[in-house]
Image (cartoon, rainbow, N blue to C red; front, side, top):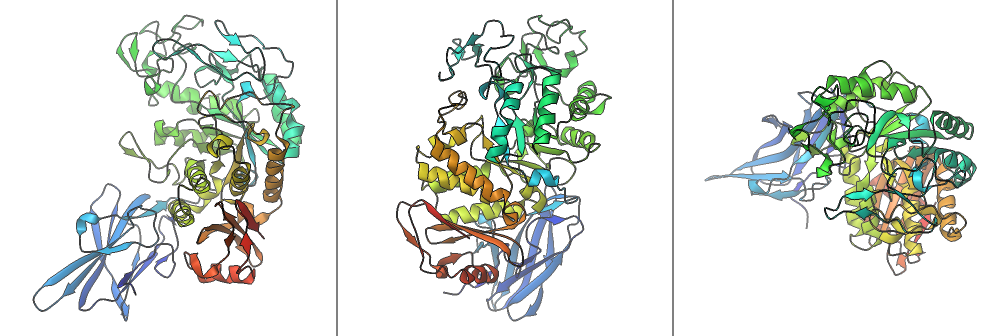
Length: 602
């Protein structure tokens, strides 16, 4: 049965250009209305936080209504839908065309009930904020430093009141008090020169970027409780060892980015100094401390704002001028200090909790250095994220160039575990593509596991066939793939701390390592996988991806995530598109069979 009203935000017949637009661009909207006695069709649109505007659409041909729209305010989000009015002899009928209820864009639905409203999103950005080419071409490796490799098999300068694991094979374990607080940290002894010794291994794996967990002095093993932003933790090494790592990595074609933890510090730090371990006058010790105004005390000194209520992580006031000067705005700031020493970029921890102006300040400082990158930790769609009742503008130019792409990870896992259909996977990934500026989508740091998630092999119930698909999908989806250390060795583990085991040197699963090497090589040698536009589609129970550059520079990847062999049926392609259909038909794969948990690639 033909639809009486048709609009599809993914089809340039109905919205041109596709997706996010640059400030000042004109967006051409079209809607097909096969209804009688139509007197008016309107585009109803409002800038985020502003009043709704109405734009009457011109009736250009039989049943076709069009309007050109130019964003009328600053960059940000616009939300829209369509209103249709019919005039009959005795009554007026008003109907609407809204986005689908999952809000992923594409085709929507026609309704008489205004209270069903689901608006479409239009992202408007200031400029195309392109990440450096080396970064966009890279395959990253995420290293939790204490757990990767110990250069001399001795734990250097162990922390007071901590314990050292007897064997590298031991499972991580926390010692907590009756409040659930960690009271004794535990260490394996991984260090920076251990990473340097394993650079050849990483190069042979195909890695060209290293993302290190925090390396600055801190009490914990994870180092997200910074004690001193300008000192390498002595358990990891010192500044000369970091310099050597950066230099030798560069000689092998690898660059190093650091984890910037600027939302909070450690209670046992130069700045807070709760236990008096530092020579400074800390904020906890006196209201006369130069750091006192960095923190918010409800009752001095024992009640203060802490990250998620974790008392050993006091939150810093990012509006403090002196804190801003230390991190990015002053001479010899933290960003300057380490970037001048060869750091290729930064990943901002809990970017949701850093004000936009603070992120913009970091980026402004980083712009002094060529070819540096700034990405952030955001778990949701970063284009429409609301944090602390504020809409965030990370990706509209001059702030983050990309974010950690957790939504893709969730789609991938849900698809392989049979929790969503291939059509749903197509819709969800297309929704991300539509909302993100193209340059941001290309710069997202994609992952299938991090120090904050269960291991991917565990998430896939230790099914190696599923894991192989996950690895290839990580390399095929748009963005920059990032491998969590040890995933390529077959490590398993649930939530923290089980996901932070020591790398199993000499006990790697060679079959899984082979999956990673082959998939990484495919990406490193295929321009379309690094630079191509992204077109997802489904063919019944098959999920497909086209990566397209131009002309003959394209590749097709089709996954069978099911337990049964599936035949390729091009007639079931969703969403339909002439160009996609032409590419698929040219492959002459109609009727081919793809085995369970296998893929077709050309």
